[in-house]
Image 1 (cartoon, rainbow, N blue to C red):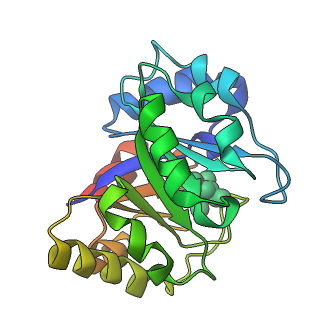
Image 2 (cartoon, rainbow, N blue to C red; image 1 turned 180 degrees about the horizontal axis):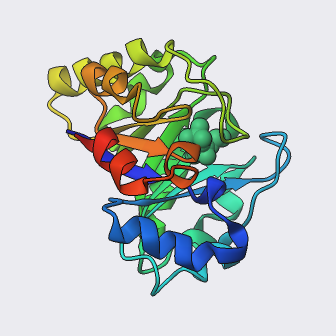
Length: 214
Ligand code: DX5
Ligand code: ZN
């Protein structure tokens, strides 16, 4: 069993409210909010006003994924009554310990993400302070890419570390996961699965959500 956070990057932006209500009604555990600045990643998505327009519509909490340089500038903008996690990229921060503390002081749980080329050990010194680790299984920037199985040993690494150290952070994976390959990340020990195109482009969204979770 895993939880699911559908990424609204693959939703119909002209009907965003309806799409978000729909996936919440069908069992989404979180609403994954992909924020891109055109600098950290070669794409621009949307910012806090779009996310905030979903307050009162989304019945699942937000799982915010900031793919932006120097995220400390914007953390407060993403804290709302419906925000649970704010995740920043290790590669985008000068002082990740400071940013983790900043997110918590702003009133959210702190997540840290690593890109496919980043070794999992870079977070070793911070594990006790992290609430969520997001392992990227594609290069961040776009939905609909192919899953990279180099993410699997990283998920297993963080699961082992969590056991050894007696910690309780959430392990999340993002990119290229759908009903057909979700077993791979679940077998590796993931707790929370992001799925964008697999959910929003599906003919039967409930079937995909259930298959990914089970
Ligand atoms: C990629 C984003 C992902 C993306 C996932 O940079 O962080 O959350 O929306 O989309 P799929 O599931 O289609 O790979
Ligand atoms: Zn994401």
